[in-house]
Image (tube, rainbow over all chains, first blue to last red):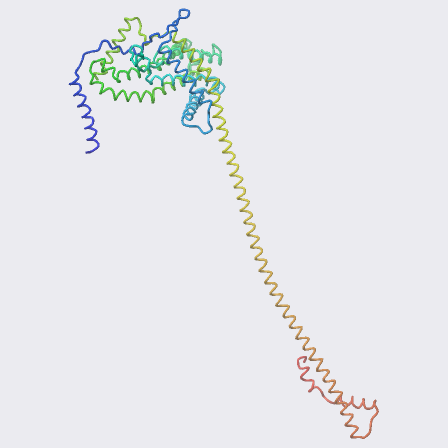
Length: 303
Length: 197
């Protein structure tokens, strides 16, 4: 039997089983009680309110705490026992450090003094977001909506969640970035000089009205960065988790077609590998790289 | 593709449902969470920039400088080795030249020694030959003298016998000299003086 025939046979058997299951299990009709979006709902676990602001501990805060603890713990642990001949984990951390230092920071901020100043911030952004994204793919007992009874102990069921899949977190990081690069730009060129530098070069001979129009566009684009930077991270992680949720069985449950699970599960596996192996790191890299680019652009001699 | 249509319909329905709730919690930012984020990110930034990054940076820098030093040291050593090798080669060449020189000189010396020895030998031989000839000549002359005096005595004796008269010494001598002057000894001396002639 040729390889081609084997593949066809395999795929054929797979679909035959799928159809068989479809026939046997049938369609139970749409499931109204299953609310997939509740996976992302933030129920306050410990309610705290200070000066009218809701500072309740919830799932997202737990993930932030985990990300903060893991980032600090892992990095200081590795940093405190740097060997001359590194093991594999140290080598990976060194690689990431080198990436943040030379590729992200120095690659986008030509001024060495400025790069030195902003390197800790950019590297922390990268590692913090990376750890946030990665723990988002560990099943943790955080689903308080559905509890499992283990020897009388009510344990929340295992679930996936990511702090970065909540808009507030990328948004506040983006705000920090946004104010930082404007402040650096004003510091480098003065307030008027900085605003002038928003105009692209080559417009010196243009009439003032057209210049003003372009300035407005540029100003809007500056504000658009607030949305693009935060939503890029948030939407990527949220979409990834939604895909995993649906492919991992959510769709089959929702539609009441159990046999669909057989079709979606391999896809869930594929998406999981994609998310963990690529998207989590890529989004952290993109976020910190764009921050470095904004900082470099705001302080560059010419626009 | 039904799957995706269903998913889309679901999301749309959720969005509508969210609108009914007055804004979906998926996209509505919460101030409390933002404050938590700022706080925890700030702590992370502070600890990493105070503890982790300087240490990692130091370790990397130390390693880089160690590697650089090693490379430089090995380069230095290589240069030294090359220098040594050159020196040794030079010395070897010199030694070889010297050896050749020595051989050449030795050959020359032996040749001159042989030549000297040969010439010396020749000179000595000639000297010996000359001495021998002189001896022979002297011996010949002495023999001639003896013969001459013998002849003279015999002549005197014969004359006395003939004349019965002895001559005084002076006459005798004169007579003998006269007689001997007439006698030709050249035939006798012939053997001894042949080389000289």
